[in-house]
Image (cartoon, rainbow, N blue to C red; front, side, top):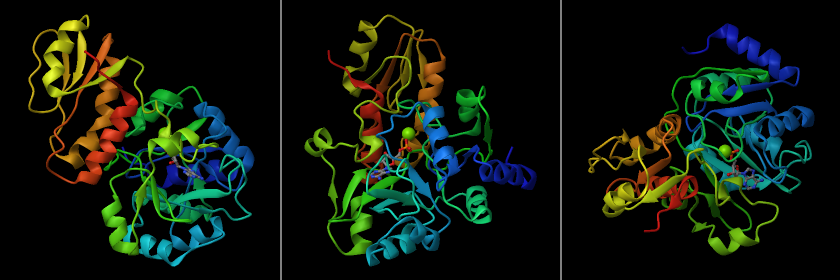
Length: 328
Ligand code: AMP
Ligand code: MG
């Protein structure tokens, strides 16, 4: 199941020679390559079919390595690294000269984070070099939360997959720009309130107006359609579910909110009711629903009233990009 010393050694050899290795993190699996090797990074873009204007997150083993990647390291970054690393927070800062421009899609800033997974931390530490690590899926599609998901996409390619089990968090990191003022570019399980508590400054949230104007993309996760299954998917409010089921020809794959029951020939993916559990289960449920050969996937909007609002916010952000809003 979990990769051992031999696989880690093979992964290091692969990365040193400019190859690509998929690695586990607590969020989703990453498609890794030496961040300082522009050719290796180019291969990652090619494998994903990722647009060149979509920058990559650089994965480091800690704050010391992060300082090699950025040209400024404000005290707020230090506090955030201390509080949240290793963990699901990517910090955007001006890049250092060592980071090739392909990594940042030509931009002046780089996103950096320290992932919380023992295998990957060991990998980066032993290699002594940061790794780019976009989600290990074809561009725009559902992110992988298991080694199996990665193999399903890249088995025909020369990608070594380090199996580190199922991702504990299940959705991508919070992306936080620090300068000139703190702003969340992509929501994740670490929310504005938790960040504000650590840095003692208010944190804004990237909105629709800035989204329309951002070029090159401030954040790839901001693309309107992203994280999407191949099967047409719709996000429905719970009270619309029966009507939606009657409208689309069956069978339909339904990702339920736990409180609803779906009858008939439909494929049902029941979801955990709590925010952490829902986030961790979401992408695997979308993938299973996608694999059922249904004509439509209906995702019933979860009840976000209790639990951590930051996590529900991140979940709703991903759902709104993976599925179109149902219009009766
Ligand atoms: P993915 O590679 O699909 O996991 O998504 C990568 C994420 O990294 C995007 O959603 C962006 O939010 C973020 N990102 C990477 N580099 C930058 C950057 N230089 N500036 C802003 N956001 C970035
Ligand atoms: Mg992605």
